[in-house]
Length: 299
Image 1 (cartoon, rainbow, N blue to C red):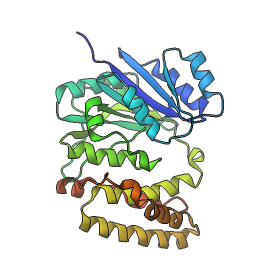
Image 2 (cartoon, rainbow, N blue to C red):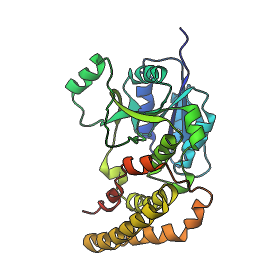
Image 3 (cartoon, rainbow, N blue to C red):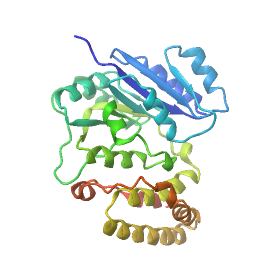
Image 4 (cartoon, rainbow, N blue to C red):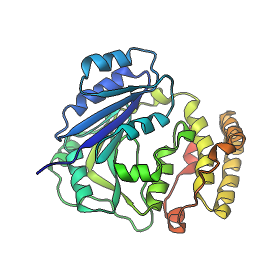
């Protein structure tokens, strides 16, 4: 029986060792046909040269500068597959996960996105790995009191659904893009489900994110996320809560980054012009977004 083409899309920026290790592991995936797309965000090391030399199978798209998460959209538009697997430059799927992902999609026409079980590469143990190999049956996480988003280090999506939802929000540049996209996928009538036997490994290390970029963009984009998706009453309430958190956390953690991010959000409000679309009340209430994570970087 003919299987569906799956496109893997990842972006990279000056992390040649991480992206190359991920690509080596992608070669071990037990699924065909695969299309592998890597969008380089203007790397200034020899990332491009190494990929071109060692990974001839990869479709490498070279950006002239760092576009942030907008680079994913370049890859999404290029993808020819019926499904897209979204990865970070330091993540990769367990070898059987894409096959399992496709099976889930084939069984449920309303399933728009599969959220992988994204595990820390440095901490996973062999027992859990064995469980993944042997697992079968329905492994969906079901809950009646919340809706699911996804982790961008490992997720599968129907290509047509992602394009209909509008791809990633380029105005965000970094962070909260998955939550914004989840709002819109749910709002056009599709489901997002987490499956315990569909696994990706993420080589996350705090030292790789040790800069002011993360708290800045998490905070700035928390405002954007609220203003784009919530009803006026809820958006006003959450905006006031975010303003309070910016001031309180700045004093508590002795940093100015939260206030700078808040100021940037208000000064760049016009970037959201024409992009605000209030989601269904049910989604607004049940898709839980932990906005306060923006204020935990210096605790």
